[in-house]
Amino acid sequence: MENNRRRKHRNRIWLALSLLGVIIGANILFRDSPPVQSAQAFLNKISNQALPPKSNEDSQKQQNTAQEPDSPVPTKPEPASPVAKPAEVPDVPAVGKMIAHIPLSKPTVYLTFDDGPGRYTQDIVEILDKNNIKGGFFWVGQNLKTEQQSIFAKKMLENGHIIGTHTMHHEKLKKKPKDVQVQMIRASTDHISKKIGAPIYYFRPPYGAIDQNTLVASKETNQILAYWNVDSLDWKYGDKPDLIMNNIAKEVKPGSIILMHEKEQTVKLLPKVIELLKQKGYDIAPLPVPDSGKKS
Image (cartoon, rainbow, N blue to C red):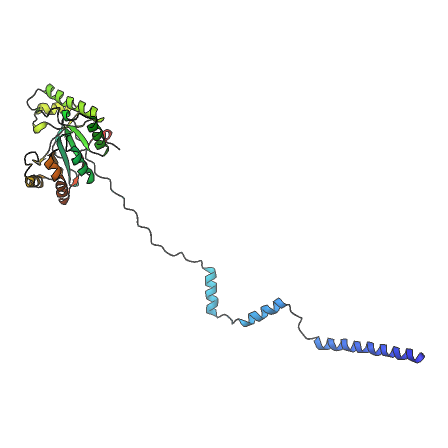
């Protein structure tokens, strides 16, 4: 029994010595080894070693990219929209003054038509409207009778045309007393103004027959006496259109007021007259009226 106890004691001592030797040996073996790295640190180390070192040029490019913001790409400026110059507007002639032309800085002429309203009024207006042209119409009072004519006249005014008077019965004023001429002018202006619902600014004497009393009568009735300096002679050469065209071409000049009539031959020739005037470089304008007489 005593021997068994001694044997076990020796075994324990050898086991303890063996364990102590293992511990001492392990300490000697791993004393100079680096500490164990984490998995993420190890991956980072491998990644950094796999990348080639950056050159100075690459480093400079990266530095410049970081320091300098992107320069804006220059864009071509949008062209400015052209600003249309306002059309030149002639001064309104004084009442009682006779006008045969209205000059402007730009070559301009004025188309006028006598003796309406009648069967050709609408045809003439349609041709003018199609060409964006405003005309002057001198009407005989007795011809303006129906409600339909009045409605059409108001539409003409809205579109920028001008309506003046030509007496009530297409009578000569010349050599009549001043008071009689005043009465004749006033009768037609009152009648037509009431029918069209607008004031009248222009009066044209039939046949162009006037005297000093006519000028005075025009002033007393607040009318501008509208004459002309180009007579188309459409009233005379209805069957000779070439003569009408040649007469206009020969006589027209800047500022001309052109006299025509509401006749069949005029309707047929009007597109050619407009083309002729445009080829000669003329604008075709309406007779000027005070602002209060203009339709917006």
